[in-house]
Length: 242
Image (cartoon, rainbow, N blue to C red; front, side):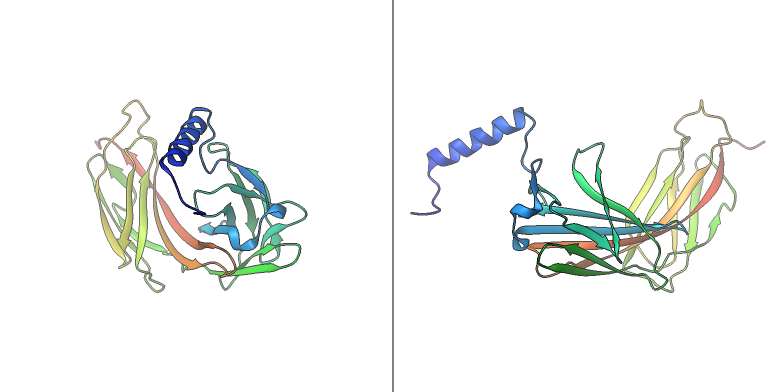
């Protein structure tokens, strides 16, 4: 029967996948030209991010079949663009994946349109940026010591369900918190010194990031978009105070 899977076929597929892994050809590492595939087979992931007043960074990922499928390389003049700005091709130095990446001037209303421009169609996906979670205050205000807890307060006028919080610095162990309730205040765990050999003048960066997700164009096989805005402050760090 068409589409049936026999034990021999399953063993053959398992052997091929094992061989691909040994050779470094794991599924999802292949690249296909966009000219050779239909739109309905493309899975899309778009994301925008902005930190403070920095430019908005836009990225796009296209794959065949799903999030673990082969990477789509835009060819034949096809392109990704955000608010009319074409994204440039960029090879991720760690994964080797072909991402499409560009810097887009900030829209005052936080509204963006991600378009996959094909030879015969344009697929548009709307992305709305969240409000920036502006950090209003911290305690300690300026200088953090070993085993201090950091309390921070942020603006909730554009609150979403949750925020992510990050505390990092070369002298301390990184503190990372995902899906913290977006209620305007949070107290971290104790700040632990990581490298006593570092000089005492070692800044700590505290960041609050608010994100939202949305669906991409229904013409795709599937996927989603995400948008993030981040605010951060820098505090001093010292192991001991006189």
